[in-house]
Length: 508
Image 1 (cartoon, rainbow, N blue to C red):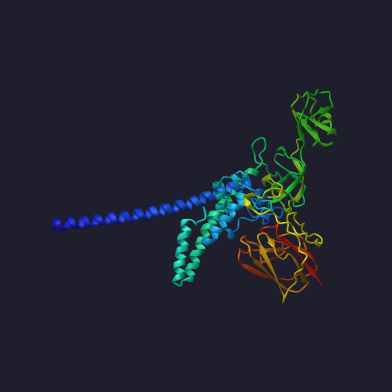
Image 2: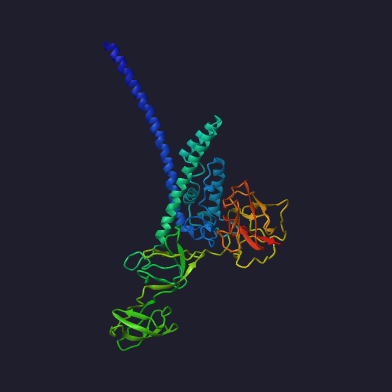
C-alpha cells in the first residue's frame, strides 16, 4: 500500500473513531441525564418519607396505610399502588389534587392545612416531596425511565404486540413502585428511630423475659425511662407481624426528695408522690425502704427505714427515690391490636399517639383556599347497630332516611369524594345479593362491611371489590354478598373510614 492510501485509511479510521466517540458521548450524556432524573425522583421520595414520619403518621399510620393499618387511624391510606399511576393524564390530575390537599387541607375533615401560605409549616418543595412519596414521580411528569418504557409500550401496542406492551407497562409500574416504596421504607425506619426508648445508660429498652399472650406483667431490662399511666407502648416494630400495643397500668415509681431527710425520719417529702404505692420497696442511694402509706396530696410517703439488710442513711434534697423493680403492669392488646406472645429481647417502642378528634378544617371560620364551607349535614336517621358493631365516627356522613333495596338482585352504590350516595341498605338474610359500587369521584374508594364480630379486616368482613381492593376514580366493581344472620351491620370505605360510612340491615 502506498503512502497516500495509508494516509487516507488513517484519516478514515480517525474519522470513524471521532464519530464513534461522538455518538457514545451523546448516548452517555442522555443516559447520565436519565439516571440523574430517576435519582432525583427517588431522593425526593425519600425526603418525603422523612417528612411523613415527622408530620403525618399520627393520622395516616407509620406505614401510610391509614385505617387499613389500624382502625383507630382517621387518615386516608396513601401507600397504595393506585396512586402510582402510569397514565400521564391521571398523574397530572392526581399530582394537583394531592398537592392542593396537603396545602389547603380538606374542608369538613381532620386534614389540616400544611402549606406555609395557609398557616402551615411546609414549603412548596416539601409538599412536592410528600407527593413524590405517594406517586413515585417528582412533579407531574414520570421519571425518564418510566417515560421511555411507556413510549416503547405504545410502539409495541401500535404494532399489535399486546404482550410486549403489557410487559413494558408492568416494568414502568415496577419502577414507580420501587421509588415510592423506598420513601415508605425511609418513613418506617425514621418512625422506629423516633419511637425507640433508651435507658439512662443508653441501651435500647427490651423485654427481659418471654411473655405469653395473657401475661399482664412485663419485665424490662430497665423500666425507669419516664413511663406514665395510660401511656401506649409497642412490643416489636410497627409494620411487622406480631407487633402489639399495650397500655401502661402500673410502673416503678420514681421521684426526688423535696427536702433533706435524716436517718431517723420515716416521712419523706417528694417532688411527686402520686405514683408510689403502699407495700412496695423503694430505694434511695444504697438504702431500701418499705412504703407504708402514701399521701399524694401532700406529696409524702411514710416508710419503714433500712429494710432488706440495708441501714438508714441521711439523704440530701434531690436524691432519687424509686422503686428498683423493672416490672410494669399493662393492659394487653390496646389500640385494637391482638395480644400475642413475645420473646425476651423484643424491643419495646413508644406506642402510637392518639389521633386528634378535631377541629375539622373550615369549621367555624373561612375555609382555606376558597373551598366551599362544609355542606350543612342533613339530619339523617339513627339506626341501632347490632351489638358489638364499630362505633360511628363523629365526622361520618349522616345515614339517609331513604332505604335502598335490591332491584333484580342488585344494589348499586354510587361513591363520590368522600361519601356514599346511598348508605342505608336493606337485604334479605341468607340470599345472595350483588353489590355494585360506582366511583364517580377522583380518589380511590371501596365498600367494606363489618361482620358479626364487629371488627374491621377480619375473616367475616365482606367487601366490594372482593378482597377489599380500592376502585380508581371513574371505574366500578361488584361482588356477590350473602349475609347468614339478621342484624344491622356497619360499612365504610377503607380509604376514608371517618367520612364514608353507612349501614346494611339484614332482615328475614
